Image 1 (cartoon, one colour):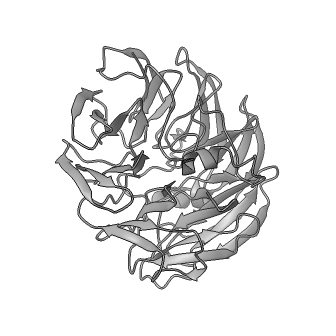
Image 2 (cartoon, rainbow, N blue to C red; image 1 turned 45 degrees about the vertical axis):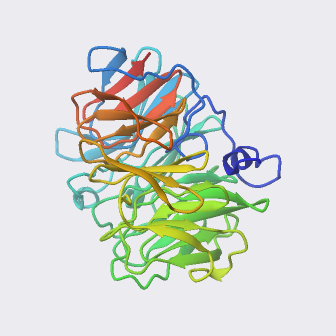
Length: 416
């Protein structure tokens, strides 16, 4: 059977508006297909702050955007303070072989008030960049979006889509059919929008129309190929909805009550969408998008799981197993088709980063910089626990036979 991930990666052949990247690269949040899975070989299993270290490089400013890696370069965003107390929002490019900063471009200069509404775990530069077709796209939520060429020259900026943030910004865009699609889930009037990637012009903006009491969320949309047509699935407060990427029209939605502050990016496998409903009590949902139209809550939910459901990390699916870790460190293996829990084990630490998979191993990275390497199997097996000694909330990237991990002050390349 052809996997849904393979369908996603070959959707250009099906004439859908989905974008396809080379699998050796890691060009967006959670990798080529946005599902946390890498085809890389010889990825490191054991390391420390002094062993298996290709290099470490100091990162200017602060940010929790995850690294992306394309054609031997690593890209991040960062909020860099100046001597007057103001902040510039920068795009930074590193040489993947040496860690040398190749360029550091100040992209936006927000008003001080736009930066202040911030959760203690957040920064003004938390959304992850996208690299595609010779450009890098950077997003800073309510403060704006921009495109640069790969030498750091600004091509356009878009700052007209304003909304009142709660705890700052977090969700990254998705690149679909020449559009950058992202959510603007702030304190009021939440929306999903599509920007023209060539010019930054707003092509569409669709209201959420949620009845949830708290409107704010931080999820990254996920394009999925359903029966040969691409939909963009975007969780928000109170419900998850699917949108037509061409015009932004809502196709279907599934409600989950008062769930808010939704962070995990959805994953699509075996004809099912897997996503979490957010705070206060997260519920993991498996949803069948095929044939869904309008309110699909009653008929298109395959199963749900409450115990161990993550509020912040996304899930990964390997063969017929779904793996996840709760924010408090409960890692679980679940039958992706039925929701049956195969194992559940506590890993040390609290977790915000989304796990990644390489060579049959799952890399669960906690907030203190320790990565637990677990076998992607139906029986629990902890292979290694590796400490970097630096706080991190960003998700790892897998490329160039290496792991790239962003810490609070450094970017690390780990090699075998």
